[in-house]
Length: 462
Ligand code: F0G
Image (tube, rainbow, N blue to C red; front, side, top):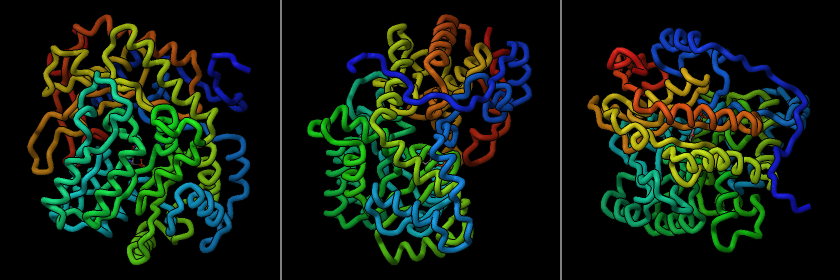
């Protein structure tokens, strides 16, 4: 069959109602939440694009697999099924389950970093950065220059800057215990990293004797982009491509809440025997015994199945297309988004859309609030509320002010996306009326989760 329509490659067996609210209800909810979408009640949200993390729909096969969960404290059968599933994809030696990605980060950095160290990454995600900084080390982002220009089209905007990588390893190698590459580059717009880039980073790390790690949360989506865009990969399966990606690294951290298609879980995987032992010791201290690592046996089953479902071609084709579909409508209407659309989300360029709001008044945050107020859509700011506070307490505007609309996996259908597009175009039509905000209360780290704000000019919309 050669029909062009790309359909959702599943049918729906169980449904969860979503609730429409009035604009007045949403206005009250926003006030109550201190103008922070993280503090809303989920039942007050119509379409929740806050994150693609842990919000996906599991398959009937995953639910069936959960009944096979072996809840033994040590040596559970579920662990070995999980280990085999991860090793088939990564071929890494030690597979250490964790309750989610940030636990893997904390354990890895806790075992490898000391004060004053530097970690290089194409772009650290917020928890990754915070976990590096918590060790009093520096998280330095070195994406290619194209990756910082939202409107520029480039097939692999997630790439790490290889010249800078080599230069920094030459100049400050003794302070750099590891290099990371995040696939896809979430904070940089969900943009993929090419195989050539990973391979070249491997060669550079080899020359400097440094280990290379993947932040592998969205490895399957990255593999699909390589298949679509990189020469020599069109005829390879996503599994073969993923295997090649992992063949270049010494280890990875993973949040199974993304391309593990699970609601919770993650892992740390690595080859170094001695380091693995130290990580397992730390795991026992705070997560659990190495054959469950903070998860139930049934979670390990769900992940083992999900990791492989995420590599299915018809799933990835639909997944990437459903995001691009929204991207096409917005681009057509002149709404500035990070181009080309990313793998798991559309990122609206709020600096370009709302040039009248200074960065000190958080334009992306303001836009995300208006999307909720007008249409009940929850998105997330990736801008100066998230990244503006420096470790020394000073303020520095973020490189970009983005609103991320993250697509939960296998959850929403095309009509939901059509509704989203309608709301976005409506908000685009009233953009001059949107006003900025100021922070009134915020913690020192990861402040976006709990900060409270206020409209800086009396109201959000004037
Ligand atoms: N690395 C990346 C690139 C991520 O996107 C995330 C989570 C993590 C690590 C941490 O994983 O949540 O399982 O502890 N990102 C989510 C998001 C929260 O909304 O993008 P976790």
